[in-house]
Length: 372
Picture: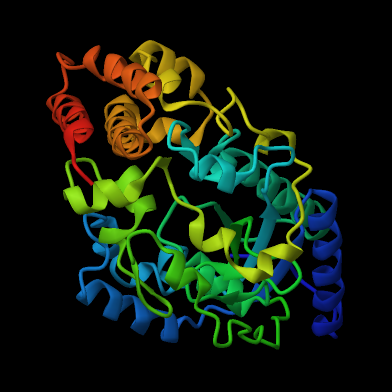
């Protein structure tokens, strides 16, 4: 618990501390900071309903921790407030996302994963922020989180005034869009909380629902992860249906379509963080080039990248599916030179040690014969 002792008018001092925390956050590179209480009862009910529909797929960890996810004081005893921050990540310069998605020979990687892993950077910044608070007031109870524990980061950020949860279930800020990371500090400091929830400005817009390649947004504010390309390419470890493979296109790690079409992202700002800039030409690289990587090359190039977490086997599965989809496309466009390169690349992995890779290589080669 906190050892912080204030003068008689404690609220005045807490207000001043809150303003100082805002200033420190800006200096540390966060675009916004908000403070919320710990009442997540509405979010808890929505989560309960979502899990009951099995929309979490194989992400059993979504229900493993029980109410710790929606009751912060159970996860970190003594928590009274949550300090929530956002940091923009749109990498600039980077190759146009739609140009890559629309080129079947290219590999599309979600924009957040083009650079270094955000977890470490945000965690370090949040720790620095906590250290600054400690230097100012003495020891206090806190714990830092960056997508690293059962934390309802989007409902918390919404309560803290950082935006509203859109129909695609991502957080949207009216003046900054949705291209940002979130992080939290659970604390026992009774800081003043945000007193106004951001108004939902999605209105009648259906752009994110209509653009979803797999129709994973089954209704506004409800995503069936089992159909979501981000889930399939990152969290799912085995095979999935041919229908979903085809709809995956060339998206080999994540999917940004719902954010790319969101009209509020016209207000988003590019990130000034060098760690978020594209590495290894991942913003504009061919599937054949990536498929040629062996496991040692994958481990080397993906050091410090969020992509490394899925492992080489799933990475190769994803690329094999995308190559199969490229073959289907080349059949349509009658581009024999490109098709020959893809077939040659796939054949090099027909005897791969992984049965998962062999299965998807075999499926990909069959796509050249598909009559569409």
